[in-house]
Length: 85
Figure (cartoon, rainbow, N blue to C red):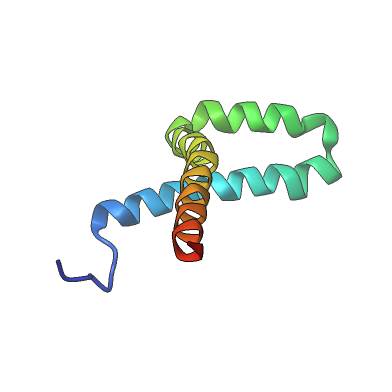
């Protein structure tokens, strides 16, 4: 299968949604929490309510990272063990 050099339209849509979620989360952590801590929790709840499609992807990504990390480490250790025999 040939490797594409650019993302498909669907991939670009997913990237855009993740980027929006990361930016909303970053604004909460780096702007609102330090400057208006009393509004931080309200902002987070509001953004999750108004943009659930962004956060759904972000939540799924955050769940997937530990699973993928564990899988990759297991494969790495397996390959190391094979190579060390």
